[in-house]
Image (cartoon, rainbow over all chains, first blue to last red; front, top):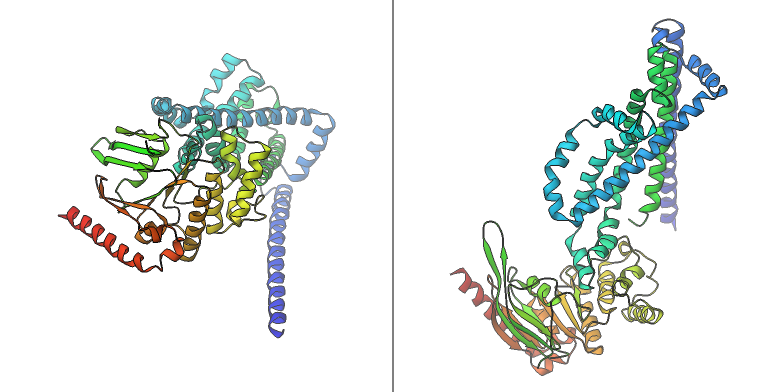
Amino acid sequence: MKQTTTIDLLHKQYLQRLHKEKKWITFYQILIFISFFLIWEVSSSQKWIDPLIFSSPTKIFHLFVEKLQDGTLLANLNVTLFETVLGFIFGTLFGTLLAALLWWFPRLSKILDPYLVVLNAMPKVALGPIFIVVLGPGFTSIIAMGTIISVIITTIVVYTSFKEVDPNYIKVLQTFGAGKKHVFREAILPSSFPTIISTLKVNVGLSWVGVIVGEFLVSAKGLGYMIIYGFQVFNFTLVLLSLVIIAIFATIMYKIVELIEKTLIKSQ
Amino acid sequence: MSFLTIDHVSHTYFTKKSATTALEDIHLEVEEGEFISFLGPSGCGKTTLLSIIAGIMKPTEGQVILNGKQISSATPSVGYMLQQDYLFPWKTIEENILIGLKLLNKLNENEKKRTFQLLHQMGLENVEKLYPNQLSGGMRQRAALVRTLSTDPKMLLLDEPFSALDYQTKLKLEDLVFQTLKDFKKTAILVTHDIGEAIAMSDRIVLLSKRPGKIAKIFTVPKELRDTSPFKTRQHPTYTSLFDLIWKELDQLETNNNN
């Protein structure tokens, strides 16, 4: 009896320590956040840094309200989000499909191997001008950029994971007369889910890069356009506002992917 | 005509640098309901032989005939149990044990009920909705046995199915598998390197030599051992003498090989 009470007590203390630690971490996180903006604001108003280049949080906020009211911010944000989400989905989808194709036809994968290496090594954004000429200076080219930047690396990573599935799982299915289709559906694809999800996380970042660079080049709409426009008219408040918005929405996208990950692989 | 004929099967593996003969002229006739063990050191081509009987691999020479029909691809008549359970970790136990029926398009209420009954007979209650990692090693191997039996195969191939388990679980499972196979009158082929297990479970023991795997000798297990459960067999006086006999044969095979 006495022993259980001491154990209970120790457990309680342990939980308290855990709780306290968590509180401290949150405290420091908030501290960094606040001091970053505070120092930024003060050094800008005191002219320690050039306010023309680095702007200041209040200026950004005023511009934010202004752009929100005239509707241009939401319009541009909409365009960029649409392009990024599509680029991200296409990149992951086509990459996985291509990986499935390579798995299905081993000879094809051997033939294509050197080309995949070259395509992977190549900086995909360099293809931008060609896209714009071929697909026109609109959202199609930009989505193509967001897609191409992640598709090859997705293919390589997912295909590797397809190949690494324990052959004994395949053997189990084969003893029940399973064909390639069944082996793929029952063993190869589900066991590669964790890899596919982790490429999703990488692709979130990559498709933002593709889309923003695409918008730089097309220079008509979107957050990328806001950045390039702000740069050209030397309005760095606009550039920084766009950056802040991008940071927020890229994080939200990443969190959504994390949520998908949790629901998809709850069993493992 | 016997139930299963392994008809002069040979198999050679080819790599860039060499051609390795894993099996050489394996010939054996197995009666229905018989329990055969292939006993041999690692590298005697045991798994290759099972894969050939299961129809997953084609032998370079010879053929396997089951019930008068040549096995050329995987067939539902042959069930295969691997060294480890290989239950799919992302499927529940229910999904795992029904996968065979699903793949063979035989999944209906009746078959489902029969499979669940089998699961309960194996002493697994209320595990249908659990995932494999929530079960112990012995429970998982039992679930794997249910999966193998779910499609009602005529013959079972057991590839050292107890080797990954601890000793106590292994002994218990031996008894369970032995009894289940006898109840359902299944023919079984076990490959193992465990002499005791071979004696405890089988009717005949086929000794394989190493590289290439060849039939070195066939022992018939005496009737008094055949009819008793594996656990009791191990305590039988005849068991020890047979063990010694096989031990000496195996030993000799090894020394012959080394010379």
